[in-house]
Image (tube, rainbow over all chains, first blue to last red; front, side, top):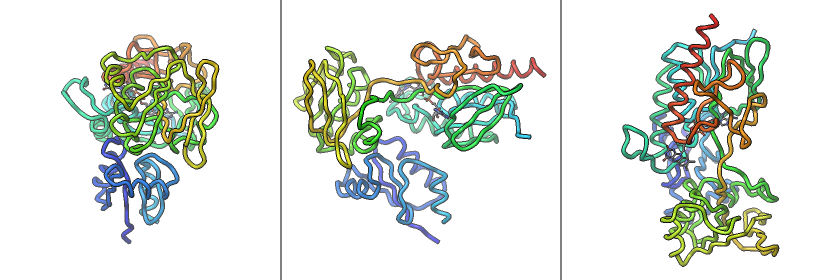
Length: 78
Length: 303
Ligand SMILES: Cc1cc2nc3c(=O)[nH]c(=O)nc-3n(C[C@H](O)[C@H](O)[C@H](O)COP(=O)(O)OP(=O)(O)OC[C@H]3O[C@@H](n4cnc5c(N)ncnc54)[C@H](O)[C@@H]3O)c2cc1C
């Protein structure tokens, strides 16, 4: 059971750093998309999440806005 | 019977975390209830005034705080918001959006949050172009026209960040001149990408799915300004609404004495949520330590 995890974030965003660090500490593989480096990433994130803040975490197609450990664990278990 | 903790700490910013570390070392049976870990400290970009670190980023310092707290084994409930604090029989009831807890003593360390505009469209467009943390989200607005609301240091700081990124920046300032540091003002005034609108007040936020304009009132005239982003920087307010029985200042800061006692014996408070002189990380941390040492004395005297 290996769900794909994506993190949309910004280098300036403190909560993005926390999110990435958490995933790394838990040994969860993820793809990091810097939305400031690529405009398409930003558009993709805004369309998927219907809002305009970072981080956005996508796990198996489901979207979490912000850093929410409990939600991440829940979606990974499902 | 519900478990009765010796101490509940509300909030895990610098004040709450330091209070928790002291509580663990004093072996006080403690629960920490908090919305997030790190508080405002995790939101600041660069910190250059916390002793021992000549330079550290906010998230890094918050991580170090968290590591220190988690070294000890006590209960931490994250992502819970306290909605009520009340005296019940001989102890205190702490209600959250998910649970309720009891304790013999409480430390309120719930800090501050951004003041909201309180105008039409604000709730609807929050996170949909309306932003309260420039450090976090500014780069999402590259190529956009944006408005910064406010005229103090945090508004100027947001403007300096946005000048480098956005297409154009309007500063919407209620008074007749900016208040922030001269150095920042000079840099902003030199920029060709910034207009400063003094004596102006935002009265409505407009958009469909996302923000596309604001209505402002200037000298009794109302005009509409097309913007895709709005950065609200009009100051901070204390998170003290849930503590209805505590004495507060006019601005809502909980009044404490130099032992961090409030008007209710058994309830203590620390950090930015209090009327302590100056709001800084090192001060909040020190206040958290003091609060727990006061709790320790209070509990010992009642054994
Ligand atoms: C952008 C920015 C930059 C800054 N830069 C610096 C700097 O360089 N140096 C410096 O010394 N200071 C700086 N500060 C100030 C510093 O961050 C604060 O003084 C400090 O964080 C206050 O700590 P605190 O623990 O009292 O409150 P906070 O940090 O506000 O923490 C409050 C905690 O309570 C929680 N909480 C709030 N309401 C509830 C509730 N109802 N229920 C449960 N939990 C709740 C929050 O989630 C949070 O965990 C900066 C602040 C900001 C916003």
